[in-house]
Image 1 (cartoon, rainbow, N blue to C red):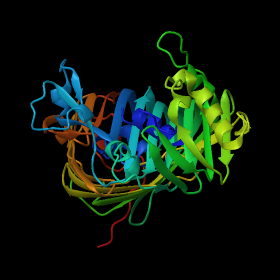
Image 2: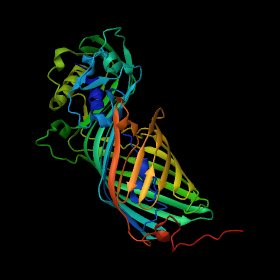
Image 3: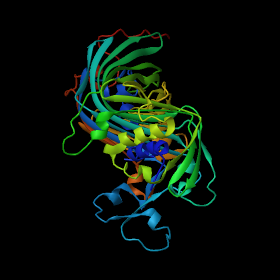
Image 4: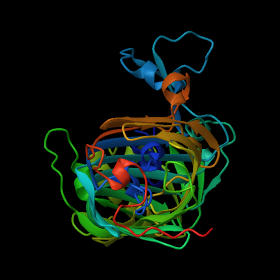
Length: 485
């Protein structure tokens, strides 16, 4: 089925996204999380009871979209299911029995989005140098994709309907895909104050970029379907870029190529105060800025800009030979020829920058009783560049029990401020796992995403391995406040 090249760019990346948005609250809020907590707030390990901790490895993946779904399915029902799936548009009469799975498209009035993130955390550690200073190392490989601002008119059933064929506006939509790695240094400064403890943290990250693709329109585009396989569009200003090695992806001969580099920073402040039995604090408040930075792709990279007020019809047999990814470059050059009259006129440079999935986060932790905590967290995505990776918004309430060897958390979150989800995370000894969308594993519904993380940690053994004998508390060597009577 034909899609116009511009809009097809959105939908191709949307498909990739269906395969950013996970905060792993079940492990990152824990006072025993050590270096893992610095990924939500670089000062998040202010009350770590350990002199040191090591994360051996962690894998996390998150996907959510409202474009397609598996009907009446859960993640557990898909695992081990070898039945072939049925394509939804071929099974519109839902009262007919269907053998196997049904892969279908959303059919409502909502605008479309897709977001995905994968993180592989390598060997990482944190070590306390003295009562005021801690340092750490973070290594990660990440992949993220996001598609936002896609109007409902580009939904599968709406776009392919012959009813109405009204024109619509594509208003500042964007799609991004990027893979990169990080090597970061964490530094935490902490000190006692008159009323509590203050921690100031930073993660300074060296970034290596591998593959990237993006497209966005700076001005609204008027689009109308004019045939079964063609559309008419007035092109304002569309900017797109990609790494050419992405077009050479094959299972047989692809090798990782570094196509860009950059610097990223996380900043965080944590303040705790109040007396509580069995813990350092009654209240702990934090604020952090995450993934502040950009990656500059200057190897095997192309930047294109098309800017015109001419109306053009796209479609028909001209694009029939451009279905494969390896021919995508040819399709873009033909698109440039159609819009600008020259297949190379759209090329604007051989480098471009992509922003990290920047966000601001607020955390509030309340110690109810020994080992029992209640946390409230807000994450607000704040992209700093026009073609940055989007981060989903989140507000969550997380009750948790924490101890040296057993931790349980049940985050209840409002994803994108409109989808209620309940999760579960556990740490037993050196192993931890969790998900912020537990119901997607067990409850059959229109399954449109997945969320999980798991990993291994090493921490000191023995009663005197951390501050206050391995329990949260003020460090033995640090000055203790004088209390007024």
